[in-house]
Image (cartoon, rainbow, N blue to C red; front, side, top):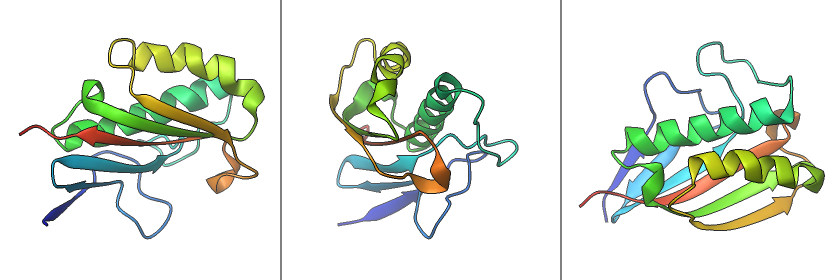
Length: 128
């Protein structure tokens, strides 16, 4: 089995010792993305909606750096600091996954890295 580590140019730096993405055997495994602004390295914290959008943009950046697309995402796991954000998340999420509709789990976590309100990880298919 061969692996390729994915770190998109201009993407936010990981907050720990891990790869933003790992491509292996036709799949891309995207590490949990949080709302880090890739240009400034600062967290987006002004609203949940902005956090969710930045997190999804960071996820998209990793997926595309691997040569795939959001349409090829087959599984998404979302961690929220509070499930009261569920409806707002769904409105924004639908803009990114309107057609592909991957399998998904959403859970409330006691605490997320850097005390953000949302973290999203995914598994995508890679082009043959």
